[in-house]
Structures are given as C-alpha cells and as structure tokens.
Image (cartoon, rainbow, N blue to C red; front, side):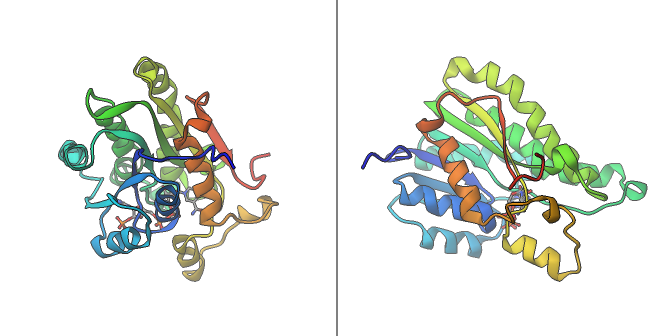
Length: 248
Ligand SMILES: NC(=O)c1ccc[n+]([C@@H]2O[C@H](COP(=O)([O-])OP(=O)(O)OC[C@H]3O[C@@H](n4cnc5c(N)ncnc54)[C@H](OP(=O)(O)O)[C@@H]3O)[C@@H](O)[C@H]2O)c1
C-alpha cells in the first residue's frame, strides 16, 4: 500500500499540543514517521503527549506564545536542537465569550496575541533562511467563527479572521522559498476544552447547524496531517473549511 501521507524524516512543529486537536495531531504525525517538536505552556501535559508519541526525536518546549517578543528564542531553540522545519501547525489558541458592550482593547489584545500575533511571528521566524526546508507547510488552526461568529464571540472571531486574512499575502510572498501557508476553519470538535465549556453551562447553538454532528480530534488531525504532507502540495493561501456542514 502506498502511504500518501508519509512524513518520514520530516520535522514538524505543533503548537498547542498539550491537549485537544494539537495533541491528537502530534501523535498522528509521529505515527506517520515525523519527528515532532511540540509547544505549549503546561510542561506535564506536554510530557504526556511526548510519551504517547511514536518514534525517536520528539521534543517538547514549554513556552507561553502570548510572549510574542521572545518567540525568536523559542524558534532558535527548536531549530538548534531538532533542525530546520518541514512544517508548522499552529493549534495553540484560546477562546472567550465577551459581549460587545464589554469588549475592551485589553481583551482583544489577549486573544490577538495568542491566536494571531504568535502565528504571524512563527511564520516570520520559521521562514528565515536555515530555519526551514524547501517544501515546508505552515498551517494555522482557525474557526468557522471567523465567518459566522455567534453572540459574544467577537474577539475570538476577529483573531481567527486575522489568521485567515494573513495567509493570502504570506502564501504569495513565501512561495519562492517553497513554503505553503494555509488555515483550517474548524466547526465544533469535541475536545476536553469543548466538554468543559458545556459543563460550565455554555450553550452550543452552532451544533444544531453542524448537521454531520460534532467532529472528534482525530477528524481535525487527519486534515492537518494532510496539509502538512506533500499530498497537499498544490494547496496554498487557502482556508479549508471542516465544519460538518455548518457554513454550507
Ligand atoms: N474544539 C473546537 O471545537 C474548535 C473549533 C474551532 C477552532 N478550534 C481551535 O483549535 C485550537 C485547539 O483547540 P482545542 O479545542 O484543542 O482546545 P485546547 O485543548 O484548549 O487546546 C488549546 C491549546 O493551546 C495551548 N495554548 C493556549 N494558550 C497558549 C499560550 N499562551 N502559549 C502556548 N500555548 C497555548 C494550550 O496549552 P497550554 O494550556 O498548556 O498552554 C492547548 O494545548 C484552538 O486554536 C481553537 O481556537 C477549536
């Protein structure tokens, strides 16, 4: 059988891999032969992910990506210890439910830093000479909220829409270097974060329109792995929608 998603000898960075979609993606990548460097804040959870991965050479880097001024040091550490990258999958992100009436600049800034500024900074730094291999694929995890945000999702939706907008020029600018840049807009994926949101009394009005039902983390990981692999080599500057029909 030909494995079109073979990622043998590829070095892929996955942010937000201490839980949820990022963790599932890192594990799947390792099963397909990739060497994976994972980033998030919770060190113990990162260690758990590394233990669940297959193969040698997987590493974790405990780092707060909202500290955008110091992402350069993180990128140097990753490249110095594991080599140039063949892919970046930016899953790290935070959500928030804030009504417009109380959405102040500080709240917008918090969401923008973790979800978008860090993505732009990672793209800038990993696309520097010697930090990537030709054919590299950079993917940002966005959300359908960026097209069709529900009440109180303004700050979150704007941060994800910024990611979608950024990739068009980025894809054109980085094409000469052989780097592709895309985002994926996910609908509801049943991660622990989503379960906690429901347990805390959160109402999921989106799910009624997601007529294929919610996704599992593996559904998200399958698409992200495809985008990291050469099987998607003609896809760049695109936001791929994966939402069980929500925006259809
Ligand atoms: N689940 C869904 O329905 C859904 C739908 C659309 C889009 N998304 C997006 O998918 C991504 C993953 O979400 P998820 O559902 O898997 O939730 P999750 O389990 O809460 O994952 C979020 C990840 O981001 C990391 N993170 C958050 N802030 C960070 C920071 N300042 N620095 C470094 N890492 C940080 C978290 O790790 P630490 O806490 O250890 O730092 C965690 O690993 C997010 O970008 C989310 O917006 C999710």
